[in-house]
Image (cartoon, rainbow, N blue to C red; front, side, top):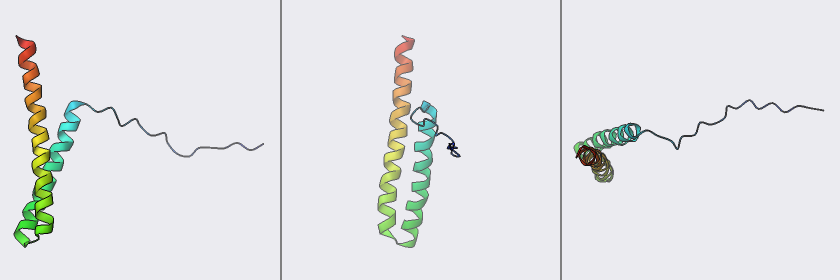
Length: 79
């Protein structure tokens, strides 16, 4: 009778993230896309500049919205 050995590690449940982790991921994505958009604009590659700029604006918008919601909840619980 043979025994099957599993050589692979079990995956970690990545669905559970802390709020600051999501904020950091979105902010990092915004910074990377901003750099790509600036490079695309400076080199005249509109095909890269416009989509990267749009994603950067959306990423920074999500970060701003998350921070606004955090501080709004803090002010509500304070009163």
